[in-house]
Amino acid sequence: MIWRLSFKYEDIYNIASVETGYADQRNNEPDGTEAVLMDDDKPIFNYYLSLAISDLTGLLARRLDPKFIMKDENGEEITNSGIVEDSQSVTYYLVMDENHESHLCSSLYRYCTDFLVQRVLEQWNKVQGLSDNPRKEIIKVLEFRRKPVRRKIRNFL
Image (cartoon, rainbow, N blue to C red; front, top):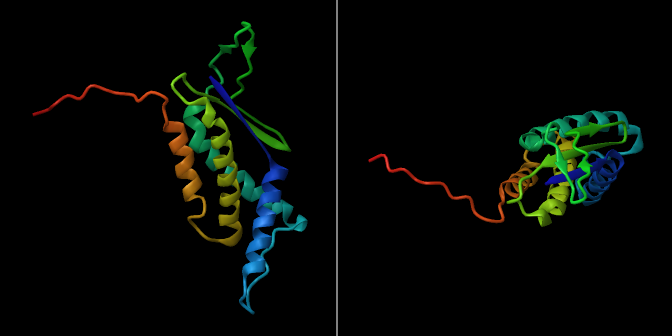
């Protein structure tokens, strides 16, 4: 199976901008900084996003194989480019075996989106750990199998 995940940069920007707006609104400190992500900040946002995409690519790297050729039920070849990145979006083509639960593709998309947003916000706010939870969820989805994989255990005693 090939799972296609496509992320538009504008969508990531919109979510990150709203999150910084909410965080600023909740900030009750009189000396607090206004760290709302705005259109003027797009160049630095694009830089932070490129780093976040590199991190996401590292998480998904084991599933990227542009040499893998798959055909659909009609015998037509399914496009598998590995990663396609342009100025507006990035698309991942993940090679998954039949034992992966295909219903988790939408969950994986949401966790990856959350990872990109949180990774950008980590850099924006100069904090660590925001993207840890989405990272764990991505790994959990990638490791989930429909049928458990059992291996023989050898006793070394």
